[in-house]
Amino acid sequence: MTTDPSLEQFGYRQELRRTLSFNDLLIYGLIFMVPIAPFGIFGSVFQASGGMVALAYIIGMVAMAFTAFSYAQMAKAFPMAGSVYTYAGRGIVGPVGFIAGWAMLLDYVLVPALLYLIASLAMASFVPLPVWAWLLVFVILNTVVNYTGIQMTAKVTRYMLIAELIVLAIFILIGLFALIQGKAQTGALTPLFNPDTFSWPLAFGAVSVAVLSFLGFDGISMLAEESKVDSRKIGRSMIAALGLAGALFIVQTWIGALLTPNRSQLLSGGDPNGTAFYEMAAFAGGHWLSILTAVSTAIAWGFANSLVAQAATSRLLYAMARDRQLPAFLSKIHPKTKVPVNATILVALVSLAVGVFLANREDGVALISGLVNFGAMTAFLALHLSVIVHYFFKKRSRDLWRHLLAPLIGFAILVYVVINASIAAQVVGIVWLCIGLLVLATFFAYGRRPLLAALGESHDAPLK
Image 1 (cartoon, rainbow, N blue to C red):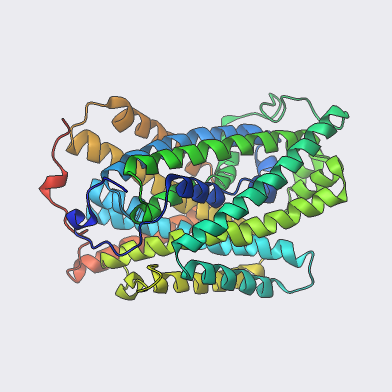
Image 2 (image 1 turned 180 degrees about the horizontal axis):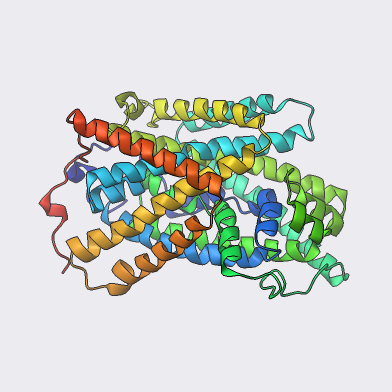
């Protein structure tokens, strides 16, 4: 069992059920990131990076590594649900926590809808059912599993992870065999660096798309109140999940970029139908490999990934609601399954509505992807600041690397990524943050200043 301070010391009751082990957390993070995530967005990253897909994922992993280190520090300080909302609210001040949580909502609330949409579009291309019907199937299935409790979610994710790794192993083996046969369409180092197309804005613009694959390791922090391990291991599970997933992303995109046919057409015209990876798989191993990778992507995104995304989102809503920053009904815990039941159902309804709406737009996937990334990057910026303020200034830590330099480097990298993100995502994201500021101002006007429970001097003592 965990040896961390009890939730009562932070002003909360233990309502969620502590059952998750280190391996459960690691598997959860891997499933959230999806080991085969690049399958679905390969064409977009290929175009954005000028064909240097592996480089985009390497830079993305380095950027996220600094973020994972900051998560580990804050999870150790505040082992509870809420993630950056909790860390910024307690590490800096309550109103900053609210804005960080508001930014995260743009990410977490839209992530399940994005996953359902991509999976439903893929399935509709193989099975003659309308996209909305597939959306409904995925939403109902995941909601039922999450409703039954976190233990059931953990069991399902184990089997899904094994299945995804088998598919990935098949692709890598077939891809390597194709390369041995001489099917490579470019030089071996081109996916890592192409002097004819390379520029830092291009690389970081591609990272802003590729980073979508890395989102999910942070979701582990949402399960802090359902973990039975020490909070230090929560941080380690995030770092381990990021490292394992990043290695898999780099290997599969390097192979895929070498085998991509019609490179010039993909670079100029992009991949509007999201089929570039499957076309490459057909070129490498035949039509059967194309079908296998496409169906696997649909199931991984629409069931496994969206399952854990719905669980994480419901915990964020629960954490904000119990602090009276969202309607109180979202903090209701089911008496038997010990899950935030109303928050889980709300996430399902929002995902279905957003998914159906965007299914009728040609730019639906691109638009929601940009918004998800903007929300995540903004929240990560608040995370790095939380480490600096909480440890370096409040606790007067002497660990300059972990509590000042590393978060500063992570912050600078993310700022550059956000600047090079799509204009549409920047505009909508800024509008969303402005709405959050208006909501915050309303709270102040009505005497509801954001104040997390049990914020006292006892948690701000200097480090020895």
